[in-house]
Image (cartoon, one colour):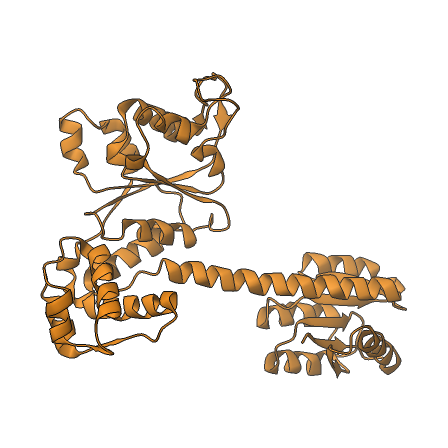
Length: 387
């Protein structure tokens, strides 16, 4: 039920506004304030979906209320109410963050349309915030070990920059989580995050996948197609398992990094791209360079910042937290109540040799959740999680 605050020092205008809005929608919760000071106190104490605020008021004018109110609750849209002589000021309030303004005396249709649009905008802002929280939780990095704390510190420092990052570590350690967190904490977070698994794409198709192609470039190229670099423009591209990329594709990636330009397969036309590149691998790229399978110049372009994600065996302190996290997550997915793990069950799991790292631990927790008792015991672990 939308909650609207009307801040207006003229009682007659205030009554007109409240009457118009209440007749338009009897579900609107309407509150009034006779001056800016009272209005700001109400904004501090309550959650409003919209504020209508007069510009010319004694003691504190509407511009001051707008600036102070948006500092307190930046998500609340403000509609400013202006007299004939206040139009220049009203336009200026738009620059300060007001959603819109209406003139006195208020035109019925314009007022109602503006109110509806402002409420729709507020709802959209809230939905986007909720969505962002869901995305962040999906890629949450769980752990309090010094190894994970160090990685989080590096992410906080490098994310606001456009520096390229090479993420290394064994399979299943969570390298993709590091990439997602760098993007989400960056200035590019509202733009695309494009993932490419270089190991999953046949070598003859990797260039087309990354850079696109023009119609007729090869047998199955029946129309022009944009590649991942174009799709990621203004955002981030994550090249996972880059150690499996062909040398010819590596050469093109190198050019893209050097010149911020790409060309589609079958075309000699350059396309400018603005993309931040993150890469990950489970291979020893220094060894790959020595054996001629990876370009040294590309390595140095990618490895501006190096982040090594430790194996689970090297961060056993985090295992109890991970068990709890996966138990809750799996319960949500299956629509059940999270199962508790006894202290002995957790201790036994902490001592396991996790060759498959976090991915393996998640699978074991899911297996125990499905097959174990209401409380997962040491016996359940020995029975269903034996190595």
